[in-house]
Each structure stands twice: as structure tokens, then as C-alpha cells.
Image (cartoon, rainbow, N blue to C red; front, top):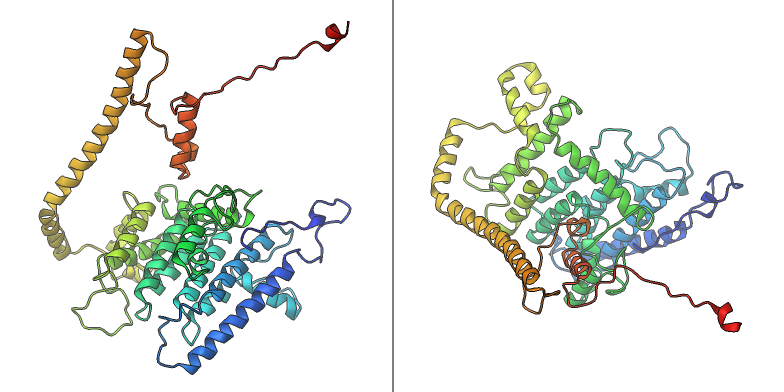
Length: 465
């Protein structure tokens, strides 16, 4: 259902006068999918009530295949309906405020709200990890898609990241679900949260091999599915993947907000402090600190990353993707710490923004000194890789010069090849496709490089005469 693409017929009929009150063609599919989801959630509730010994979402994997797929499909269909309709309510859950709607319309609009999936994630009794992961993925998609139009400040991506980080920090969240939520945060920031369908790919079948094949090659195999047949190379567009395109449009605007340099005053101080607060919580979580204020733990206990290296690496990759050098919102908020003690300081929420104390500076200096040998090794390896790339380019230049001097036309097997350029396909993640296309265009893959086609036309009138 995530690969369905349809638009109302009267969108293209000038005599119909717009969509009006006509139902979208996918409404019956949404209703069937909603019933499918409600049925499986009720089955899960009955199973949980019958077995009260397991209330943390762990286990029951043999039963948790229907609800994740239904949530993923329902969210995608809801986004598709609004992206291809002339009249669409807000995606953030409030709907059409002040407009009277029928009860059946309210039920139809619920899957287009983030609160619907938040209730599934936080509902009691605790759902299975796969169900909660699918709900979290749907929340991120809905929040990002709400910013697809440039008519307000793009807070959807930030809101989804805050939601996912809060659920990672919950003590009842399992280790596997925490890592999945961290990967969903990365998918949202890299434009893959809707087109990749990570949760639906891995939870739709019981076989790990089948799930891996579905994740890599798409639902219909290597020659179909998605836009180009692979779930790893996703070039979505409004004509082929309108729902994923809407999510990516909102995510791009949200990334611009997170990466803003705070020089032109595009965003208000309140938003700057909010981004700095999120960055503070993310940074302290990566450092293994306990950032949950309401949790009554001993003073010497660590946070969720204190003993989970996989989760820490995933969050570090997220930090490096969003802020590769500096978080300017955090630096600007730290400059306002001079207002500490004033009413304005607490009104702006600067009390939640981290500040470097003298003790922390001394501890950082000690850590830098201890890790200096490792830093030298890393710098040395980076220099070696740069040198290898330069030598490959020089080797090709020398080989090409020698061939030209000897009068030979083409390179034989085992000769150096030109360095691959980072074209559009490369930047989208299609490294193999980019290399193959460039090698074929240069005739360096052993095949024939066809650049021109000559059409030979025979004069039939001359033959008849």
C-alpha cells in the first residue's frame, strides 16, 4: 500500500469544478487498513491481559507483524490523500478548527494527525516494540510533512526529534527499540524516513533473509518497487512519490532551521533556545549522562548511553550530520548566560542550556590528553586516504600520457582508470550506479561507448525507377 499513487479524477476535469465533497479514491483502502489495525491492536491487548508477566514490550515477535505494517501503510495513505487533494486539513492533529464535521469524517482524519500515533506508542498496556517503532516512524513522517508548505516556521522536524529523544530516554524502553528510534532520527534528517519504510521492511515478515531482501530491493524485487527498484537508492519526486516528497520537503526546511547560523535573525530567540535545549539533551545523552530529571536514581548512575556503544554511535552520527562543526544556536544561547539570575533568563528557558564549568574544562583537557594518541592515528589514516586518492589520479594521468606518446588508443586490462566524479547520482547515494555510468560514458568498462547514432535512409523512389 505504500507504493500506491493515485489522484482524484476530477482534479484533472475542468468541468468538475474542483474536488468538492467527492471522496478520495484511496478512502476505502484507508478504512480497510484502519479496521485491520484496530483489530490487531485489540488482539494484542487481549493477549497482554491474558499474560500479565510481560509488560515491557519485549517478546511476542511472532504476533507483531500486522500492526506495524498497518500503521506504516495507514500513515502513508493519509499523507498521499492530503498531498493529492485540493482541500487538506492540517497534518499536526488539530484538523479544521471551527469547521463542523461529521463523525465519520473525524474518524477518517485521525490517521493524518501525529497525536493518533503518539497515543498508540504511549498507550497502555505497553505495545510490542515493533508496533511502537512503527508509530514513532509515523509521528516523524506526519510532523515533517506538516512543514512542506512555506507558510510557517518549520518546527516539524525538531518536534519529531524531541519526541524520539524523549522516548529513547524513557527507562521502560528496551535496548533494541532505543537503537531503532535513533536510526529513525537519522532517517528523518537524511530524507529517508518515508521512502525507506525501515520498520515496515523489517517487521513485515518473519524471515530475516526475506526482510533484508525487501529492505534492499524493494517490495517487488530488484526490478521494481519504489522509484527505482531499490530501497537504498531513493530519488523521490512529486510525480512518483508524492507522500515521501512532501515529508522530504518539510524535513529540508527543518534542517535549515537546525543548521541556521543565527546571523540574519530568521528565527526568533525562543526557537533558538529550543534548538539549543535539544542539542544540550542530545549531547549529554551521548556523553552517558542521566538527563531525565524526574527519574529518581543514584547520583553515580549513568544515562542510556553509559553502557550502550551502539546507541552512542548512532546518536554521534546524528549530531555530526546536523552540526558537523558547530551548533550556532547553542553558542548563541551560551552567550546569553550573562543574564543568569534575571527574570528574562528563566523566561527564555536558558536554564536548560548547558554551560561549561571550570571543572568540565579541566576534565575535557585531561580527556584530550589521554585520547591524543588515538587522534594522531585517525589523522594519519585520513592523510593516507587523501594520499591514495591523489596517487590514483596521478597514476591515471601518467598512464594516459604514456599511451598518447606511444600512439595507443585504449587502455588494456589492468591499466589505471580515471577518478570518479561526485555527480548527482553519487550525492544521492547511488555510488555503484554513478561509477558504472561514468565508466560506460568514458568507455573504460570494457564495453563500447556510444555517443552518436547515424541513421541511414535509402531512397526508395530511385530503386523503383
